[in-house]
Amino acid sequence: MIELRDLTKRYGGTTAVDRLTLTVRPGHVTGFLGPNGAGKSTTLRLVLGLHRPTSGTALVDGRPFAGRPRGLRYAGALLDAGDVHGGRSARAHLAALARSNGLPRARVGEVLDQVGLAEVAGRRIGGFSLGMRQRLGIAAALLGDPPVLLFDEPFNGLDPEGVRWVRGLFRRLAAEGRTVLVSSHLMSEMAQTADHLVVIGRGELLVDESLAAFAARTAHDRVVVRTPDPDALDAALTAAGGVVTRDGDGLTVTGLPAGRIGELALRAGVVVYGLHADAASLEEAFMALTADRLDYAAGGR
Ligand SMILES: Nc1ncnc2c1ncn2[C@@H]1O[C@H](COP(=O)(O)OP(=O)(O)OP(=O)(O)O)[C@@H](O)[C@H]1O
Image (cartoon, rainbow, N blue to C red; front, top):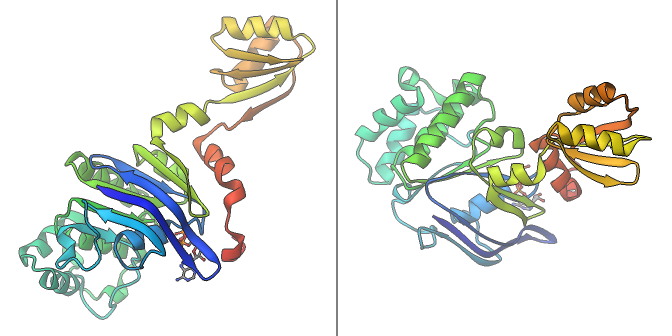
């Protein structure tokens, strides 16, 4: 379990993480979402004790992670796949980590097999593709068989087969009762990976709920229609299973896709105009949620 209490990190005048209070529970894949510069990486670094908070606390299974000897037994993380010694082989890199964390050498072969790098284990990491480095980073995170796992943008550089594999791996790790926190700036990616969502914007908590609850709340194919004959259209759409709310000549419809609404209007002989789908996908809902929270200070992205 990861517990954040009023966690705050300031860099000079920039507040990267702002009084974040949050519990990340075991047994779930928790998607940690936010636009670029929202504070995701900073939060993960605070959890791992790589940065000191300005105020507040971050606990991993009830204790601060910083300074724990042999930390890989308690939490494993993939933060920056590029942050490895390129001159070493994958096997040597993992063996050094195993040694410094007091882990049996046999774990190296096991995790290399698990991430599909066994055949290239003797090759220099410098020649690895980004996807292979991501797999190596995941292998390092798994080395200590830890109950808590953090992955920062793990899909970067993976091909579709790699993405599928990572999704399956995260689900298995969560099903084993581990805490799995995965950061991303793409809701579409998390919608297929996570079962719980945490969304932050400018370091502040915006959403902490199940993916199903978020979807039900925000991403119902809502369609707005205008018509000179609202009564007739209301009746036709309601009969077809749509849920209609009225505002003058405007109808807001949920439960029916826009194309079907047009078809039903035509059949009922009702003229419609100004028909548009609103928040039709989770991604749109996410973007709408965070649109005013983009961090332009971080480079105008
Ligand atoms: N070491 C640092 N010094 C100064 N400012 C920093 C530092 N690290 C992060 N920041 C700032 O803190 C804010 C949050 O950055 P962070 O990298 O945590 O966001 P993020 O959500 O991980 O973004 P991205 O998806 O772009 O990686 C940004 O404004 C960033 O510029």
